[in-house]
Length: 417
Image 1 (cartoon, helix red, strand yellow):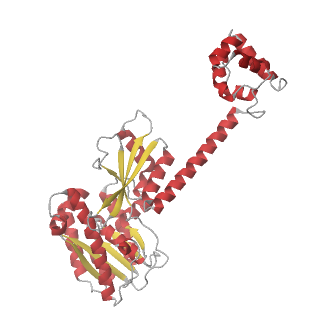
Image 2 (image 1 turned 90 degrees about the vertical axis):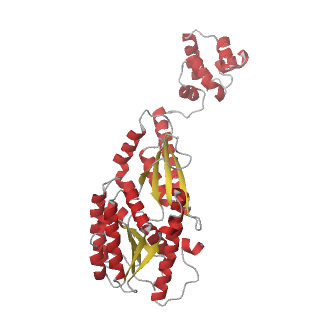
Image 3 (image 1 turned 180 degrees about the vertical axis):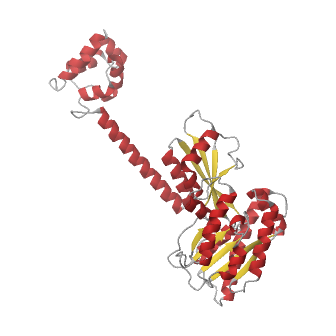
């Protein structure tokens, strides 16, 4: 043992002498008996590993060096190499945790929120992330959106406004492609907290068709409406029920044009109009068989009423019609001019009324159903209920006009109610 500990005796002894610390004084500072410390300093026994941090303070030697001298580290130990390996190991573990978390969230129906949170954490691990599904509906429980709360793990000295701008600069395009928007602090439990809030649509994400689409339905189904009337949610629920793919024209426009979060409505509208028109007139060339498309963006729908009669004969159009109060609310929330929303609604209504029943329909969400009082929270719940019922109405209409029996069970959410 003494030969193994000879370097320990030499180096630590020299360090203590340089500091003019006796063995007895060192033993007292380390918290062991003088006899035990004397045995360590003679090389008779190996010092306890838990005592090394205290010996490092007394001697002034680096802790890693004491571990090496005491025989607890391999020969030719390199702090730089070990630190690099530790960092790499930590990064691998972090990536694994992020992947496992994303898989778990995706399995729980929170895939879009998981992707958004993963993008943010990958760019800046200093965020503490809270993911909260926003359950809506009185008759039907559905979480069409998820709220992501971002709080700094440690104070950074940067304002929330500066941090928000950094997220927009670094990830604005990627988050816009997921339909992510900033949310005001009207979420219970967040009002007084220093946090940034994001809203992520879950059901309205563009996705591929399932493994067993119901092929007796039209090849392409299009749901149209004005903003904030849940036309996109109606389309998504229909796609889910018959195992079709789903395409949200607004988020797809952001993705294809590389637009950032908060891009002005006219810019997004022009991009959406371009891809929507091409898809509507040439669906086969776009490889969009067995798909539902949704568009509720006035700037993208300007020319659509004139294009509907020219659409592929296997395209079925659904217009989600709402009452005048809801048109007004749509304009207020989306920032559009009310007259523009009203004009778009009238054009879509007229165009769909002229389509034969085999090619299109109008489904109504009435003011009376959603505006029974002035409670905004209840209004949101009633809107979700109305969207679910509208999706079921559309599916039953399609069964009727195509002379099909009702399936034993729809796929997706509608199959669970």
